[in-house]
Length: 112
Image (cartoon, rainbow, N blue to C red; front, side, top):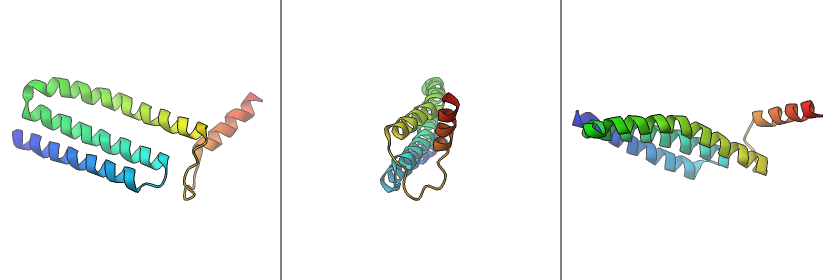
């Protein structure tokens, strides 16, 4: 069981590495936010589960932390993306679809 735990910890570290690489390589705040959130979520899940398997006394706490991360990470990232958009941070010029702009114009039309 400890071999699987250590393997999961290594996989988690790899996802953390990919998240850092994504933060460095992505062109704008929205892509960076997505890369960082997805990779750190998977990295945290793998690392915590691995630590829980290596140390079974921590497994219950690890599952509770995983559930908390699963609930809060998507909400936090979407709030940060919305705040950046409302503050006027423009997406990269390579962005083809801007779904939030479509929603914002619909809401503005309904309010008038």
